[in-house]
Length: 260
Length: 75
Image (cartoon, rainbow over all chains, first blue to last red; front, side, top):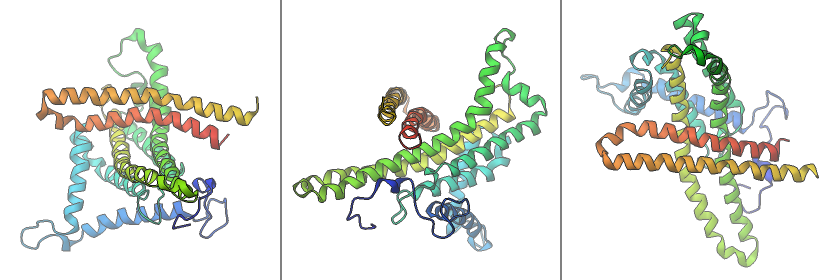
């Protein structure tokens, strides 16, 4: 199976056996759980390793080793995401956004890592939980900053003429409280799933052509397309993490500054 | 009509929604390019907005693909 010498069954796109634990139960441990666990350990471990005292030069406090990578990553999220969308007040949400970005990025990049080839966000559990956390978080931030008036300000932004309110209120209600978490989850999930399906289907064409005798001469064509799609998947992995973090920060901006 | 046949026909029709996403993405990048060629030094500052707009537009095309996949595998 690992060497691709036989055409894989189509069910392998949607089912795997659990490593241990009973099948079809919520506590079975399968490949997706393993990838999520590795992403968690890698994210937490990278930042913990880079925050030791050893990573600063003793005389000048210049960063050295892994601290360089982590500092440039944190400044990317801070300047490229938070300062662009919220401004200085959003800097206290930097830890949440950095963890979100890196967890989603590492989970996504497993699509192109050999022996795994599975983005853990291609199953709805991960994106659904992350979107739910973000939803609860921005509602909580809005309530903390604006008090109970947050719900009124969210559905009827200040500055809307009174005559338009019967039209604006249902639209904003649906859009802010229902469509936002749903679209965050589905965007991440469906992008990863679509890329995964495309990659597996084109990769499956190669052994199918090779096994069909003379048609094997055409086998380099799907192979070249698979290589190109792998490069695209790497781009999509980074992009989906960036978009999730940026949209979270835009929703936090909405909660902090009503009516923009 | 046989329900399995209806599923496949529905999945194929759902994929037509990606045409709109394709047009939107082409328009977006075209406008960005035409603006960037007039004012190259200001183009770098808007790269974040470009990527965000790309992902939001692409998301709608992917939603229609999701409907097609739901029809094929989950109904």
